[in-house]
Image (cartoon, rainbow, N blue to C red; front, side):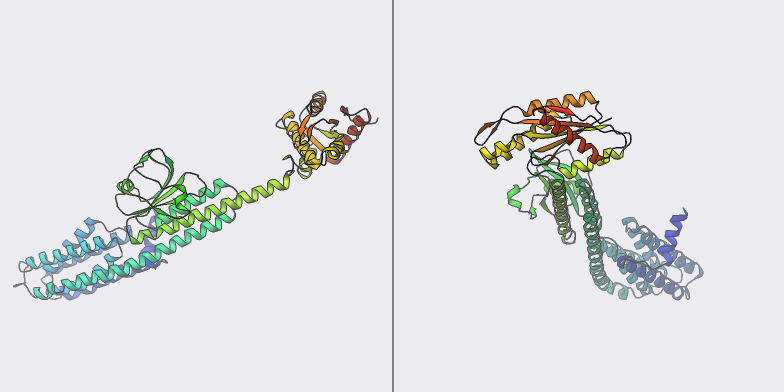
Length: 495
């Protein structure tokens, strides 16, 4: 309650920051001032009861205006009440033309709420109230025959002209503020996408921006859909939807993907207009990620249609952000992966090994794999055959180790496996499987070739760093080669 009171007090006594709200605040104060200035002049020559009724009508008018200003809504009931009160003022005040001092500020104040059609209806209601008030003017004590009725009704065309001019100004203010809000949403989206780390964050920020653009553009509606047989399946919605969307939007004919070329394409918005309650222009914007995805955007009038480029900009920025994320991810993957085999490279293997060695509770082993007679294959069949052999070896190693183990190519024909949480005999068995799978002949350009592998195994001991473990595995590997190749040796520390 206290917070609501603070906000109300701020609205009444402080000048708002936004241009539209500043204009509403100014016109509201002008309407109140016109009523305050009109009442003393009209009450001076009136009967006491009549003056009291004028004061009541003036106070109720002020309450009607205050309700409109506080709620930011121009309800039809409020317009009717204002017309009745103005008609009562015409009936009570002498001469009735003094009411024009209230009517014209009321028209300006009402113009900054709602549509042109509603403003014209409001003006008509005021004219009707004034005509009714003139009919009752002679019945009020102290009044004679209707006074200056012709002069009052002669101002009716001027009232409509004033309404049209005020509404034109209001529409320009609305359009400017809506444009600023859309620009702010796009700016915040661009700033946020610069730091977006994954595709999910990009999608979340894009949806948030789309909702902001729809909120800033009355009547604008958007829905993200994917093509379905016989229609389109809604995924996310934003904006002025009056009804809940069905599971599939039947009757919505999406364009062919190749026809769009990243540009909006007009579509038949009949089925969508029924869900928004308004007919208007509908376009389909191809989604930058979803293969069959489209953003359908609808606008019932020219002003709302200005939101369509903003929605397209959201997709464009999101597309660029996703491409940047994919590019960064690809570069990161390239920096951590061996280009020839797709295995982890030496830097990645060393980083993982150092993390494992830094954990006192970690139990791990290293299997150092060196191909036997690889140089013979390279010399006899060429480097293309040697590269194919290395790719096949990498594939077999990847299939032979567990998912939690890290298999890497250290360079040339040297490979290594980081084996986690496995007892010594089990690690030896795993190394033996590596020897078995690598001794099988491999088809390469130029024919089948056969190489073996010498594998050295070293188990991490307390106090050893990553480099020492690799050195011990390397020593064991050379021991395997010295023993005849194509076998496994486990490093045994010297007592």
